[in-house]
Length: 149
View 1 (cartoon, helix red, strand yellow):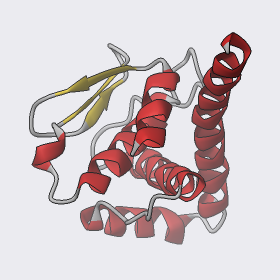
View 2: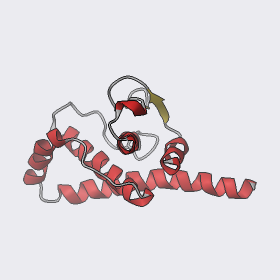
View 3: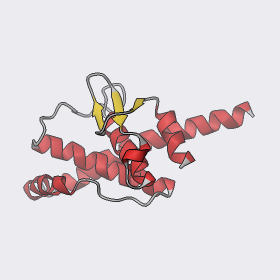
């Protein structure tokens, strides 16, 4: 998926490949994902990478979302919903078939959505901003490439 590779590179986020888990570290501002062979389908590597980059878009130097949420908290569930929706939006924009990654998060997402009937709209708004931020970086690199040619 060359276009997904280009979006990852254009993000400017420190993107590391290794280990057996995918995550974003806000304090050190880097994304890490396992190597492609760790994924049953190559497309899931890119979908996961885009999910983690959506988290990274929340860094204070970018879109400035609160990323210091305790695992399992409602705020953590909200951020996961933002990243998952953002990944789905990016996949749609890039022509990648999206899938919901974490069935185990669904219960915490449902708790958040039951508690606040506007939560889905806020999450979608933040997810859209994350996807737009990443796509804008990609578009800038494409424009620079055309100008250099």
